[in-house]
Length: 384
Image 1 (cartoon, rainbow, N blue to C red):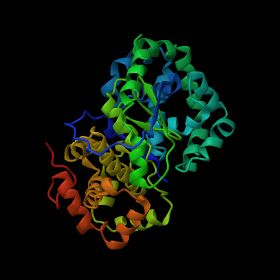
Image 2 (image 1 turned 120 degrees about the vertical axis):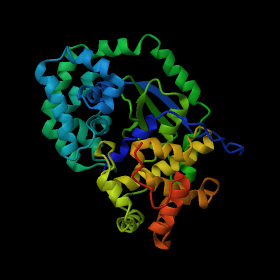
Image 3 (image 1 turned 180 degrees about the vertical axis):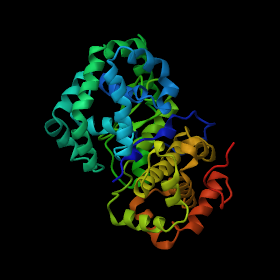
Image 4 (image 1 turned 45 degrees about the vertical axis):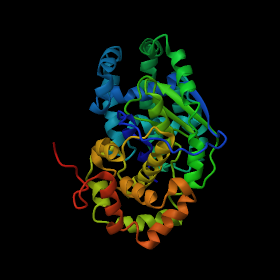
């Protein structure tokens, strides 16, 4: 399975005017929010800024320049090489995928990152191989480059990354954790996820606040995700609504295979997968389906909770407009009044594949209505 779908770059975009919540009496609260922080995950996330990629320097150029000056020259030059190799060798975006693979190894401090990398088979593999979204090639890549990564993180430790991070977060960080916890208390994301997928979820959602994670909201093992500490509560709810859904149903199951077979014959969706900028991830049709059905569902959940962005604005601004499939799936789910009825999502996707609703005629028409674009010009977006 392609795991690049874990990376939800669009979650970092500024909110558009929200859509009012549905006025139904709420059921008993299912969601329990656990808001924490992690020096270890922040060290992993800071690889993005240290890689020199504009995607991250847009947010952290000054931080990266100051801290990089404290690192040995060979480490400064190897981090960009690692990031480039990760993408060209199909590992994906370096820091989000690395964080996900290590997330079963008890990542707390920078020391814990080094310890996990020093013993991939003992500390990382057990949890990794229980992960339904695992790709064995990712673990192979990690094991092959583990000594280089250890050298990077040891250099960061020697340069006092922990102190640098504490200064960046400031003395009010504990209060920020409490503020986010209080703000989330009324948002029952899990109840909506269960209703719209037909699956059961653990009621606990772990939110890890970081200093250096923009622009990503990144899914870890189980019900844990990483996000920037300064995101507002509405953004946190949207990230949680999205990230916990991955995968929306078994991507090696019959329903997914049927949907992928239909989409593979679409003249547009596979072209988007092939031709879009790979920095956004989603470089396989399976990865795009996984991501975009989650985006369609999280849009419905966000609307129900009163924190949604306008869907046309959202999918125009996100990732160069590549999520046409999300718009189409969202439109079909809206036609079926899915937010009111709920049900088994895997059965819904199988039925949509059988009935022809995932074919270009119906899917593109639904996307055009949602995205407010002509049906014959859904992608790429017009320049300017």
